[in-house]
Image (cartoon, rainbow, N blue to C red; front, side, top):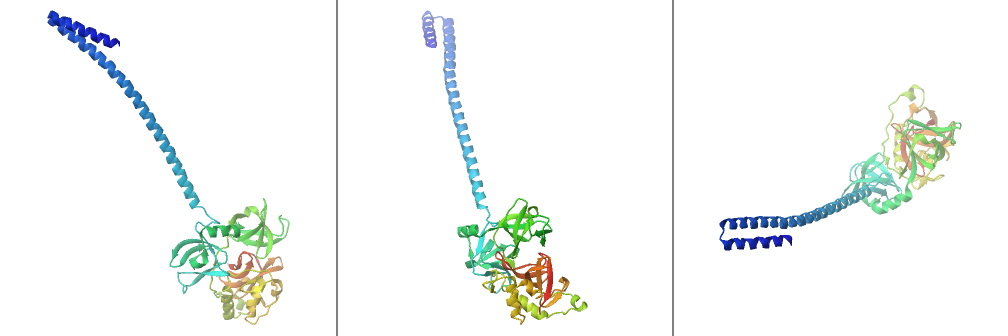
Length: 379
C-alpha cells in the first residue's frame, strides 16, 4: 500500500511540472517516477522470488522424499531377491537338485546315457543323488564318489523327493582324522572294538557331548565326538569295481596254496551283482535281504563250499592266509580282539564287498576300513 501512495505522488508531481513547462522538472519527475517504479518492481519481484524459493524448497523436499522412498523400495527388492536366491540355493542333505532312487533294490549307474554302457556304480533304493543334467530320458548324477547316468524314470525329484528325504535322512558321523578307535563303552578305559579309517561314515545311534554311539556294520560302539563330524545324510551310490587278481607271489613263497584264481574271480563278479541289495539280520536271500555271513554262505554254496550261518564259525573253515596274500574271492573277518562279528569278500585292489548294515545294504568298502582279525581262503 505504501508503494501505491508513492507512485500516485510521483504522477501528480509530474503533471504539475508538465503544466509549468519546466523541462528540468519533467526530467526530475521522470527520474523520480523511474526510481520509484524500479523500487516497486524490485519489491514485487522480491515477493515472486520468495514464492519461487518456497516452491523450490517444496519441490526439493518432495524429490528427496521420493528418492528416499525409492531407495527403501530398492533395498527391499534387493533383500527379497537375496532371500529368493538363498531359498533357491538351499540344500537338502547336501544336494541342491535332489534325486532319490525309486527302485526295489538298486539302480545301475552307467558311464554313458545308454543301457549298453559300462556300469560304474549302483544307486540303492532310497539313495540320494545330485541331478547335474538331463539327456534323452537319462539323468546325469553325482552321488558319493560315483558319477554317471541313470534312467530318469526311476528317480524321484522336486517336492516329492524333498518330503521323502525328511523321512529317510539319518545323522551320520564321518571320521575326520587318520584313524579313530571304536570303543565298547563311552570311555577310554574300556575295550577297543576296532580302528576305523578316515572318511568312514558311521550311522549315529545316539548323540552325546563327548561320545557318540554309532553303528559299525551290524554292531554298536562309541567314538570320541571330536574325531567325527556330524551331518544329516541319505544313502549314497556305491562304486562298481571289476575284480582284479593281485600281483604277488608271497603265497607260493610261504608254502601257502595259490588258490583257484578263476573261481575267486567268478565269485567276486557274482557278489558284485548284489551291490545295493538290502541287509536283513538273519536273512539268507541275496536279492531280498541277507546279513554278512548269510551273504558269504549263499555265494560260496554256489561253488560247492558249504559254510554255517555265522561269521565266527566261518572263520574256522578254509585255509588261513595273511593280508599280503589276499586274492579275489578270499574272506576277511573283522571284530574285536579275537571275537569275530563280521565277514566280507575280498575283491582285489584293497577293496571288499559285504552286507554291511540296514542303512547301506550290500556295498563295496575299503578292505582296511576297520582292522581285520584274520583272512581265509575257501576256493
